[in-house]
Image (cartoon, rainbow, N blue to C red; front, side, top):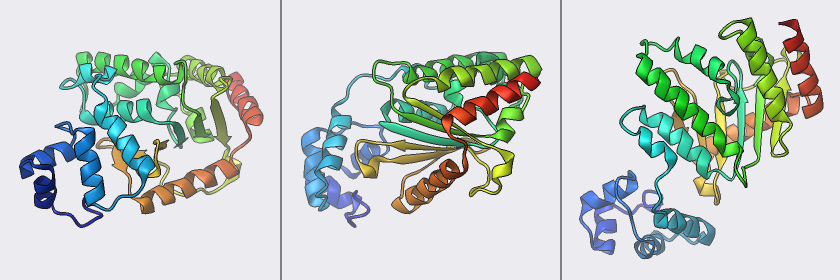
Amino acid sequence: MRTSAGVSAESAAGLLGVDRGKISNIESGARPISGDRLRTLARSCGCTDATYVDALVEMAQQRSRGWWEKYRGSLPQGMLDIAELEAHALRMRAAYAMHMPGLFQTTEHALALFRVVIPHLPEREITLRLAHRVERQAVLDGDAPPPYTAIVHEAALRMQFGGRSVARAQLERLLEKSELSHVRLLVTPFVAGAFPGAGQTVLYAEGPADPLDTVQIDNSHGPVFVHSETQLAKYRAHLDWMERIALPPRESRDFIRTIAHEL
């Protein structure tokens, strides 16, 4: 908001009566900001989106620590950021070309993935990553879980990470989760042909205001987060395309059952 308005950090610091270093710490999430100061900053930046400002103020007033904080210093920051993003999302859409949705992975499937990370992970970190992944999955099991659409390519369904029995159990987990009322599981078969993107995992998380939407992309060196309107529009179009060529939910479940029976 500050940079879009062309307001320097020094000017923002003067408006709020703090030193410049505190502005950097606030913007990086290392220091809190009061609701009143946030509204002052918004007015000074010419931000008239009341929904956006109200959402920021609500975030600023939250004092409870998320469950992921207990892993701080033990797991990569990106893993904590994904958990926090999912916890605050009002709606999520994701596309998977080679992997299963993390929120649906069995322990055995996740373990098979963590054992092939380069460089090799020590057993303690593997155990922590497993525990973290299991806790992440609770976001879809709460009293008011967010609507979640997962688009999974046939290639991911046919991967046998951990062997045939692990793969079969993973497909059964997908079928189980697909029956949840707030979940839409869509399969993109090989015959659907070409689709946009490089086949990477894409998660689009919607916030309480459009400027708070965020896209998370899996990368070999860790998760990447983008939030510019140009990039958000690109990935909305990407996911819309993937939904158009995917099988509807009932046919997707039948497709998964067929693959599971082949194992």
